Length: 460
Image 1 (cartoon, rainbow, N blue to C red):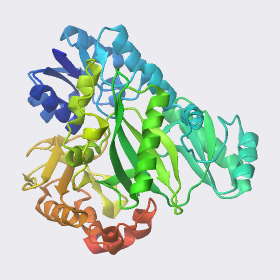
Image 2 (cartoon, rainbow, N blue to C red):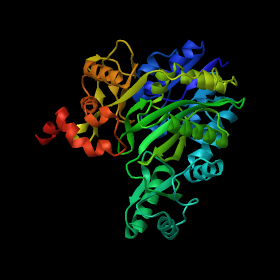
Image 3 (tube, rainbow, N blue to C red):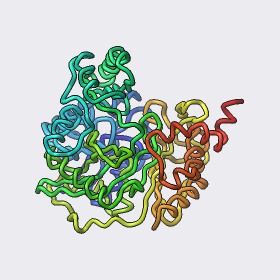
């Protein structure tokens, strides 16, 4: 087992990994930017090192600075968390070259699965259903038009290296294709340094379902059930739950089997997530694989009772999975709300600043993952995630009620948050019935803002 692990991240995920390390008698080492000097993950670590200025490009994305700390502190492994360098194959390779185990899949696997066109090809060969579209990358608008004519409009132009909705454009008519192709490719080049594009048939308002998998070096691959991630705004998830109301037992069995097949085809190792879209007819299609721990991993932890970060560390140390597929038992219902420091009344404008009074919810079946404390500063340089409220209950309706109560208890004085919006969402009849899709939040946003009082504030 490892002696010392460097945590190459910040915020709540850095704390999550730090706590897992402590429980495994592994010494955690943290890094921080100048903006995070007083952050909780710094204060709770016995060893913490400043790696640069506030800008992520000069700190949390600086491979050399992070590996310099790993060597100086005598770390034998690096945990990247999510975001930043977690899906950077060059960083995984650099860790290996420096003699530090990267807690995640090998660089070659990240590289293959990070290229969405290559991943689609690999999945087709493995018999995993993929969204109809181009056979591979499209070199230009003419190739894209030929593929679109084959599958039919509307279509999606997508960057092979994309993520978070960047480098993606919906095309409804042939005359839109060329200008939107150049627009999407330009954005992909600016965001990812890679302008490779491919094309998919647009599945209108699907459900977004993801399957958590674990794979060790001994060849064992298991799934830990699914998470429903359809409540999104601009392709950014706001609420996740498990299990999904959209899956019948037969569909769940087929989807989880496809996820395991996808991981085997990729030669996967460690924790990962296979993402699917589910159409209105009950057909599901592979869209991508996230080669890291997910923001919403606590949902799976609560329904399985497994510590996914602990499993990550064990796998990276060469140990086999602690459970077999037959031993995985999914119990009850779990739900996570992402509390973002943003102002829904003003187009979700980021709301950084100093936190005053803080009260976090508690009680039976409630978990809060956060780096907040009274007097802390939420810097403007990173994403707006301030906390994650996660609940678990025997049934979905009980989980909804528990989440409502938890959000009513949550008080974050200072920065504005989306808490009221999420609270109102939990009362929407369609959400309560579980009949929602990826377009639901955008369609109902004005109604939810009005219910929460944000719409009135905006109008004044």
